Length: 185
Image (cartoon, rainbow, N blue to C red; front, side, top):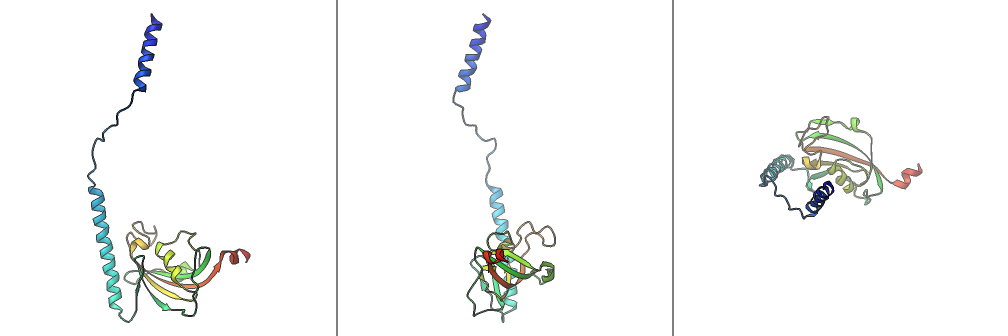
């Protein structure tokens, strides 16, 4: 008798466990308002930063700023028109740079950041610099105006650069070598 009860219970458990489960409905449905609010907040942030950058550009009409495809602006302090070689993936760029806030106050001086050795597209550096360095020829000095999303973004650098801070970076590209040349030395 005990065996038939145990067998019946086991058989019932097996059959119940093998039945097809029904998909559960979510307890609360998201309306997407958080994402919509986040998008609106970011649009306002970008518009404000672009307005600040635009005022810098307009206040210096003698300087010819170039708008990049990536959403930042730059101008040449020293331009090398005889060289056509720019850093590309597999190269090592040697450069010095300085970072200022949008009002022109120095955040990091060139001596604090010197020297920089960057394995192009193989190291993690500020997004704007990653792209901007690839536009430069050896010996050029370029000033970049980066909105915060091309700089250190919503996080800052955990030291001197705050959240969502647009930056002015002046970069001097001193040398470009291939990785093989660097490994041989």
